[in-house]
Image (cartoon, rainbow, N blue to C red):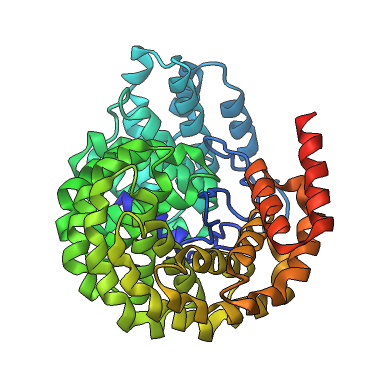
Length: 484
């Protein structure tokens, strides 16, 4: 139940856009090193966002001579103890002015006091908790909570459940379903808070813990998607990974592919995810035949990223590779580039991966014009790595090289250094690659200051091999500055 809410919003909710990246496809990553950063900087991570109450008398708000609801909101927000908040609730919980803003403010403040170890046993046993829960149930039935309020209240319950037993599992399940219905309007941080709360509540209540395999996969995918923008979401991953290990056999091909991709993305920050990889990989072997092109590309990329940290994942390679040649025609450019990169990364450890290369090279020749700068760079790098074992890759080089001049301006420094290195490697066997040399040299010069040392050294070697003396001198100057 709770696991599905974040994934629903993350994979296409109208209120969520992770720097413009939507849908179930892996991000464009550099070929040498996995870059986990999103296209734009992540927002500041906070535990819960305050909800501002509309001004009295403002637009769509009728004037009244009754008590001002904002006064109660202010009292709750400024209360110096949990007992003070509970006393306020005892006086106002059933009043006409008590609304969703008060519900959010009260739960969040009480959760904060709990985090600070300022919620006493007497506070936890206060009779007002049952009334607060009853009022919450009424608001859920009336659909009176906004998306932000629902997220805040759910997060607060995740913090409070171990100390306060005024609520019941059925109410929390109802709240989880309500949050799911509002997830399309939530922001990244609100979604992250909900996933974290769901993990905590799942350990306490069997009704919430009963996750379906699809929900497990969606949760891992959501965690991998949200990890940079909202790191708190990572706390939910270990418990989900443990369940995946037991239920991977019940996952469909898409769920297996998404879970494997998520494991590759999460392995550095949450090593516990690796416990689920053997089970996922074993089932990928049996269900690869039913995978669509996108799932095959994502799975092979994930295998390449996980080969060192979880060697069992290599058992899935033959089954994935066997399906790729027949599916190339239905692949988008990014999928083709990802398969090319993965084949280059896996060629030594799993030579069978090379069976997928000729068909992929043919697909790249046809679709290179639709590739973005990162995909072009990855493809050229992979061709340079694969040329000795699979000469057919050279058929794709001219099409890739011809597209670089018009897109090189948007290449990041690492993509430039990889492309320049590949050009040097391919110049003798595929002279057509030299069509991109001039613009690559020019833009590499412009971005030397932003290049890491590995990129500078690769570019220095390439400039020497290509006879780009001016670029070579600029690189040497930059390396000299770094030494100082």
